[in-house]
Image 1 (tube, rainbow, N blue to C red):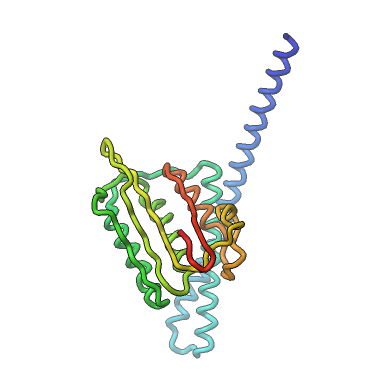
Image 2 (cartoon, rainbow, N blue to C red; image 1 turned 60 degrees about the vertical axis):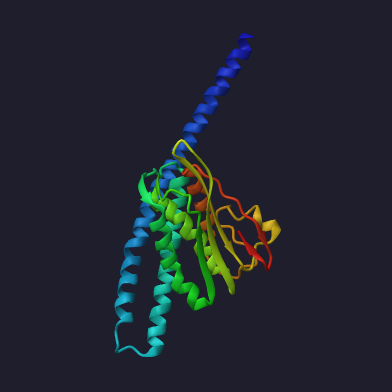
Length: 245
């Protein structure tokens, strides 16, 4: 029995040390990513800034304006990748804190509608929000993270929908002791997700093979982690050629 106790104690020490090493490695990775992303952002911001200045230069030919636009879009794509990787690293290292405050849901959904309305109109897509009138508009949450979740989901729906609609449905599921349980569904009539990809779409850097659209593959992974951080859960339902919810 004594030998057994010694072995168990040694095993616990090994696990504690392993966990400590893992935490130190995580912190080192986060510190490295924070440093390297800062180093990348500095020259990238200069490139984006000068690109914007050049787009307003009337002395440039149409061809050169096209080159500048392409440079700016590529720079923004790179900046979004950098931000996504940094966000994912912060979440995984449990270094992303909640900044909760009172926010107005009605105002946020109105802002989101205006944000995507023009893009949907230009693409011939119908954008509609349906908000349950029983929902109390004032809630306490982290506005920026909540907003980022919905921007990611609505942005994906718009990006992968060539015709039809994107429909955001906000429903009240329960209301008790001044606590609301709310469901938000983002439905599209887009290309859909293959069945064998559905289980993988929340994995970092994974992209459904039928999209044909470039990206970081981090948006949904970050979204899932943010939803969990806010105490919620996210599910997906999709059918090829019919759409995704």
